[in-house]
Each structure stands twice: as C-alpha cells, then as structure tokens.
Image (cartoon, rainbow, N blue to C red):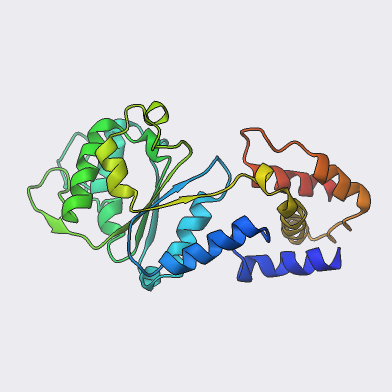
Amino acid sequence: TRRLKHAARQAEDDFPLIGQTMAMDRLRQTLRQIADTDVDVLVTGETGSGKEVVARLLHGWSRRSKGNFVALNCGALPEQVIESELFGHEPGAFTGAQKKRVGRIEHSSGGTLFLDELESMPLSTQIQMLRVLEMREVTPLGTNEVRPVDIRIVAAAKVDLADPEQRKTFREDLYYRLNVVSLTIPPLRERREDIPLLFSYFAERAARRFQREAPPLSAAILKHLAEHDVSGSRSEEHTSELQSRRDL
C-alpha cells in the first residue's frame, strides 16, 4: 500500500502516462525517442485509454513545447463548423462571420495540433487536410491568401484505420500521410497489473479535491479491483476515478 501511494504521488510528475507494466514502459520509451523527430503521429486506442495524454507528452517532450498545443475533437463539431475551426475565416466569409478568426491549424504553428476522433472528420475536410499535410500551408475561408504553417500533427482514432472495414469513408491517402509513426495504446484489460496504481493515483487526487484522507488499499479493495470488469466501452481510467471517489 505504501509503495502504491508513493508511486501514485510520483505519477503526475514522473510518469504522466500512468503504468508500470512492460507495455507502458515501452510506450513511454518510444514517445521519448520520437518526441523531437518532428514527424506526424497516429495514435490508436479505445476511448479513455489516454490518447490525448500521449499527444501532450509528445508536445511537452519536444522542442515544440514552447509553442501552442491545440486540440480539436473532429467528432464534436458539425461539418459546416469544423472547416472554420480548422482553417479560420475572414470577416464576411459566410453568414455570421463578423470578425476574423485564426484557425486551429494556424494557431498551432510552431507547436502541435491534436486531432481527436479522426475517423469522424467529414470527407470534404479530409481533402483539405490532405493539402495541408502535403504543402504545410493553409488558406482561411473568405480569402485567397496562402499562409505557411509549421505544424506537427498528432491524430487519434479509436478504430483501426488500416482496416478498410473500420476505415469506411476515411480517405486512404490521408491515412497514409498521417501514419508516419503509428502508436497503439493497450486497453486497461490487457495491463491489469496497472489497475492498483491507477486506483491509488485517482484516490489521491479525489482525496485532495474533497479534502479527505485517501482510503487505505485493503486486501478487499485490491481483490475487488482485480475482479472488476474493465472490458466495457466506458473510459477505463474514468471508471477507476469514479470508483476512487465512491470509496472515499
């Protein structure tokens, strides 16, 4: 219990991607090796497995860390909005566009652009993103001005885009453009040895938030964690956090 609590306290600073299994050690080593290579990265993993954590580590461990880390969930915006969010627009570009807006791509120049739920990106936007990746330039809506951008893209998908059946309408050429380096985050059910550490980490966080002492990790709690079903689609780390709060 003392060892787990100590590891949990160190997790936020020393091991932002929490886990002591071999799979997580390899993943952290790979991230450190590619962080400064400036290549685009495609991260695959189930919901809640830590894809944005991986993207933030790649940004924080790279020479781009002084630039902006800009995140966009491709599945959270309707098609008519996502293009303006990504590419920006000039006043009068469309109805309601009263002010100039710098797009996420341009705002991330010199830093990192994180595209989550990449598989949900509309087809028309995919075509435009392909040009951005090829030319490293962007043209905001409502102007013919071409603006160069210095970007690194970390894209995340919860499906295997290499599989045509899972890829569906996602463009194959865009997939290969983004898939310079491919990383897969193992789900928690495949690294169950990390569950006690995750639980201890979230219990410590919840205890600080509610200003209470973290509960001791008794044999009964460890047994419950070992037997808990983490195979569902809910965020697995979020499940650990909710359980920690209940035990407080």
